[in-house]
Each structure stands twice: as C-alpha cells, then as structure tokens.
Length: 116
Image (cartoon, rainbow, N blue to C red; front, top):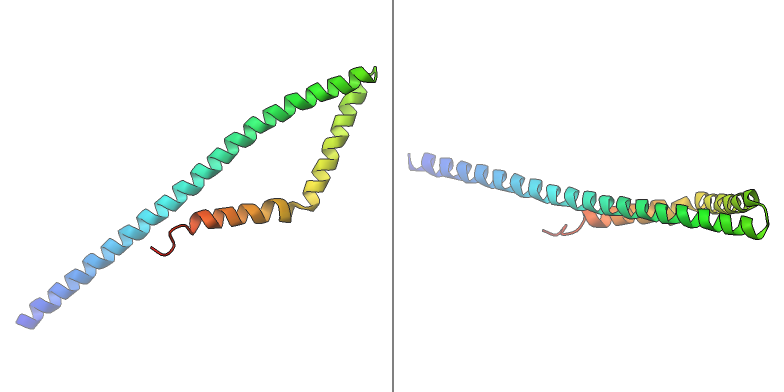
C-alpha cells in the first residue's frame, strides 16, 4: 500500500517535471523567435529608410551630372550604370557578403542562452 503511494507521488512528480520543462522550452522558443523577429523588423525599417535616402541622393547626383554635361539623360544613364556595376559586384559576392553574415547573425540570435 505504501509503495503504491510512493510510486503515485513519483509519477506525479515526473509529470510535473515534464510539464515544467515543456513550459520552459516553450518560453525560451518564444523569446528567441520574438528576438529574431524584432531584429528583422529593425533591419527592414533601416533598409527602407536607407533606400529612400539612396533614391533621392541618386536623383540629385544624376541631375547634377546631367546639368554639368548639358544633357540630363546622360546623368541618369551614368548613375544607372554605376548601380548596375554595384549590383553585379554584390551578385557575384552574395554568399560572402550577404548570405553567410545573415545566417551567422540569425544563428547567433537563436543560440543565445543555449546553456540554460
């Protein structure tokens, strides 16, 4: 009789432990996901702001170059060619400059407090 109550208490403790452990894992996962999503949102907002700055600076530079060459369309073609060169450079180095750093950054965010 006494052994049954000990076994029942042990099973109850094991069940409580498993539920608590599951809750801890769930909370850690939620923290990591929210951390990654907040980082991605911050990067998206900064990229959007940077694109607007780049757009207006490019229009101004194209206008200035075109005005200096007495032909506005040449200024826009020169700026467009500059961006084509940058695009090709980034395309050929995309793994080294974009994919690997982004992957490492996300993995670092996910693996924070991994020892807990």
